[in-house]
Image 1 (spheres, rainbow, N blue to C red):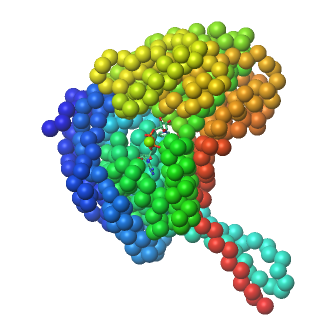
Image 2 (tube, helix red, strand yellow; image 1 turned 60 degrees about the vertical axis):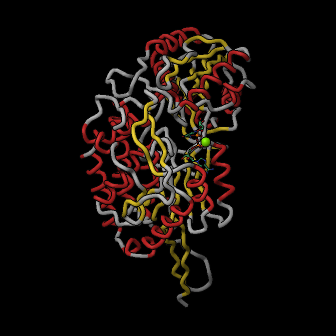
Image 3 (spheres, helix red, strand yellow; image 1 turned 180 degrees about the vertical axis):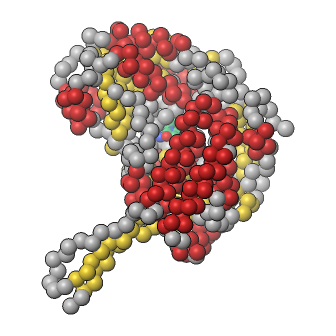
Length: 497
Ligand code: NAI
Ligand code: MG
């Protein structure tokens, strides 16, 4: 049928060739519309599969199934039973790791080695980590001062039916960051993958069933933001919505959620600063800067997209960054030598190239890259812009492409340096490069970001809370904070007098 890269294995090929449906109440069912969405390999522009286009009516069906499961036997599962299901799910993912990695690679464009060693390994760790919380989460027994004798305690209870809407940049990871804590907490789920990259979520849905996670606990409705995502956000039968994606859509989700005041968590965009002090290990810093902005072609919410380097070492760091940018091997993710793949779509390509042009028009200079590569697929050269200033769109807005905006500073005042780094509506991540302990920790306190990495470009660990200050979002995923997103606290007070 469809054309796909010759290195794609038999299992992934067979999956691509299926007629993908929706997962509702443990059954694979047709959407109520007959329309299908073509799924593209962004490295070729070729169609690799199609997916069902869900509707608002399909969301209704999925919510009903999730509600039945929540009120039914799922409620009565013990924490240990949930742990065991999750651990079986993790083992099944490992057993099917190569297929999942290949599907992720050809649908999202991310190089296979990252899909294999980063995404698939990461979701297995996330599942195993979250599976441990089922038996460890619990309430407290506060010492109340009410008159007489009281026994008071708190309970952590599952919030109920949750809607989860995920984007296309990390389809496996974003799905698992959402479903693992929700399952651990005892919620049931209506998940909407991105219309561009639903394949691996569908495969996960199948493995979840095989692992014994009961029908109706994880329902998957594929389709567009409007209607599927919008009906999830507004649905009166959904108790909580979790979203990862653009700040613009995040705002719309928050508004739609006001109807029934469902709980909302949002993981949105960023324009994360990377600050290199003159005493840093400059080679390590330059390598970190490059990985942070060129990994997955910059389509990472925490990408280090604003670089600030002390002027004493600016040329040295920028030379190393530009050299590396020109050396990065860009190509099809299935080629084992590829270090950077394409951006996800024609639309994203146009958007990224548009930002580069606007930066040049507004006075920035190209130190590396700046062009599309080839005519097939959606490849952009790793790009470094200098002479960038606040007020330019490339400085102020999230580009979500392999485009680094480099600036220098000549200050030693940490308050002023951090004020410059903080001058953004976003506050997702920040990275500081220095060997001075005092500078490192002072900066960590001053930066308005949910994640601060020191001498590191990222910190992908299931235990570390992940989320943003300011317009980068509401709430934290990963760690125990993720469990909190899926639970309600109940205070019980018993008058013993
Ligand atoms: P998007 O925010 O439109 O898409 C993310 C998810 O939201 C998808 O599943 C989409 O179907 C869904 N969605 C879209 N409209 C919706 C609505 N009205 N109600 C409910 N759900 C809706 O992101 P898009 O348009 O693909 O990318 C645009 C920009 O957004 C990117 O260039 C990037 O700057 C940012 N973005 C940030 C991400 C992050 O990880 N923080 C991920 C994806 C995009
Ligand atoms: Mg959009």
